[in-house]
Image (cartoon, rainbow, N blue to C red; front, side, top):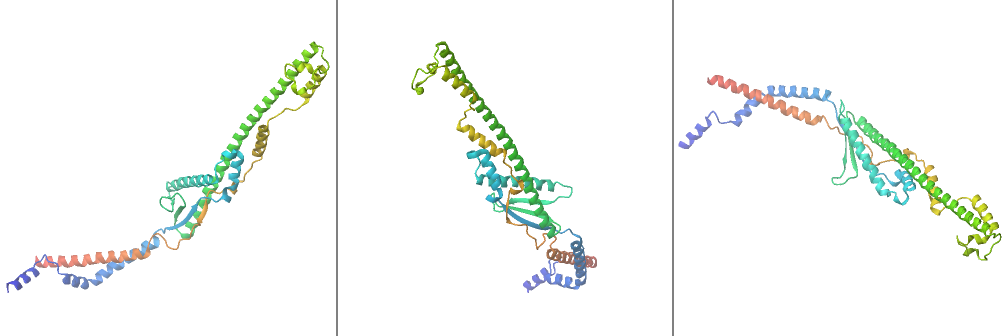
Length: 325
């Protein structure tokens, strides 16, 4: 009997929560709760109608292939010969340069009065390439077109930069080769003048010794000291021949001359250079990032239900309190 009294006492405690009573109260106030849910759904519909949509288009790029930088690589080989960078090094250099320029563009777009969200990052964590490019816009078509435009814009920028670098290297190499050729020509002229001077000295000795005809049979044995023994006639003939003979150059002179001509004729169309290659072209998104219609509606129902339930329970609690007082 005591046990039953205790149960009745606990159930009569005003601080105990009676779940059945709560359910009954909520059921009785179902129309109030439904009204709040309806209001929340209306507000959610207004939000969905006027909220700015966000769509993300994604493209994946990687290093350019050999054909896309073939002309540029050939130009570097002409300029630097065996010292030219390898094709794989050029590929990595241009895509790294592309990545840096694209990151700079992304930062500038973010700092605009109306920011644009453009990101570039490695597709696979821990690997430099390929790179994933994402652009957010208010429509799927605009996002796709704009990210393609920015990718092309940076590619054209890299083309111009590589063309400027190449022209600077050409100017530098041309100036260097001209200096080398000029030095070789100066040396060849000095060698010719020295040869004529040596023969002229020998002619003076021959005239002083009154030697007009050769006194030695083997000309290969003639030295600077014995050259006067060739006689004045032969020496005069040698001076005339040396004076009219063109300068004598080494093989390296003609190699440098050929290299200079090749470099001076070197022209490259920058539009044939590309700093990237598509792994995946900009896609047309089929699902928008925000607002999420289903999520917004679910949250509206939950929020409306919670507020409506709070109103019903609060109203009943206030009524019970007044009755008790």
